[in-house]
Image (cartoon, rainbow, N blue to C red; front, side, top):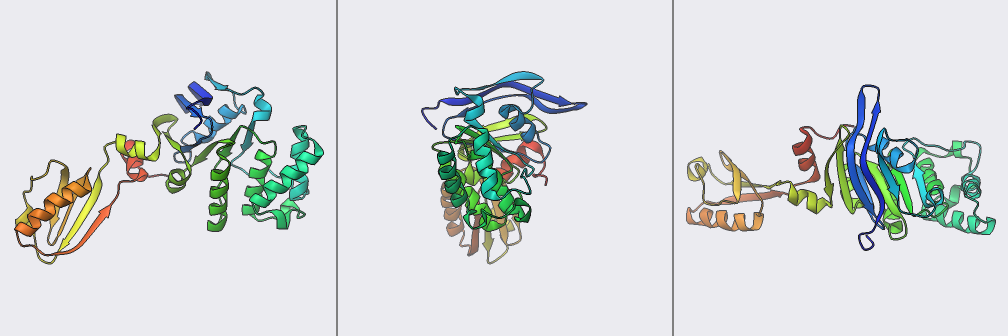
Length: 307
């Protein structure tokens, strides 16, 4: 982020479609030079929000302010559903889009070659779009959104339908442009949101549930790590009850297995291993499962991400 300077400010955005309140009075700032991810299940309100931010939809109430001089030239959008001209080649489409933004021919060609190269489309640049794979079409859509070098680009599910190699390529490319282009993306993939985004907004049923970096969200929502210990013998009589550490909660002992939750695994393990040694118990295995965004999401919404 560049000096925490907002490039976009949304205030009290709401949008209704009939009886469905798709976006419910949400406000946030997006800062220059960051990757801002909207995380949530399908139907959460992500696409509706991104359409209002990019000017495709008018909000029923609230406002969006983009802090740039020329909104049309300074924004780009890659929609969730593929939009290509089937009977134009990759190169023709990117050049045509550049002309729509009144970019000089020499500059367009240079920019087109750079984009197609970065997105590994150079080898198919003379191929008609209808003959491209779905992943290639998705990458072409990203190129079309960026041909005019926008200050802020909206990417709606940019990795949808991509194979693992293409997913990594697109992820790395998005990271590479963030210092010169602010990126706003939507996803229902928690892992991708965490890997890509500087800040994440979790949204569901049109409501903004929490915003911050992955670490900030994890730390602010009281989630705990899970520690599991396997013993050689039955330890039910050794650890029930156990109240020797205020950091430990949810302790469970079943046969030769023990588990507990803690906000400080290192300190808690030091304490409990001391007790284990004092009682002469033999440990067979130890497992630590770190708290995750999925834990946060389930805690906030009461269900897992929907496909």
